[in-house]
Length: 88
Image 1: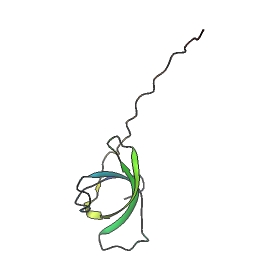
Image 2 (image 1 turned 120 degrees about the vertical axis):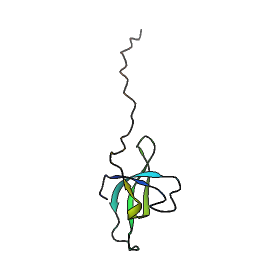
Image 3 (image 1 turned 30 degrees about the vertical axis):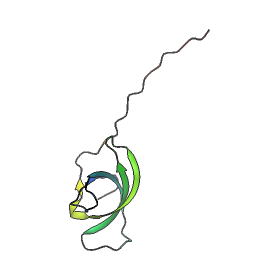
Image 4 (image 1 turned 60 degrees about the vertical axis):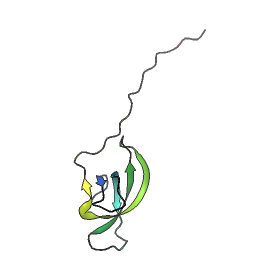
């Protein structure tokens, strides 16, 4: 996993993810010692629109992390152009 990767975490990654979540990875935390095949990652949890809602440090099984082939793109409403209004 590299910075910027979007991953899906399910129970395959850890039992804490009964409901799957999407995370944009900031970095792996190599200074923390783990069991073989497990890793600490730091990242932002994403909502359904792809916006970051929480910064988290997560302990996951590397083999259970699913890399998303397409990054989750934030859905933004189109900006409306407002016509000038004359007052007076």
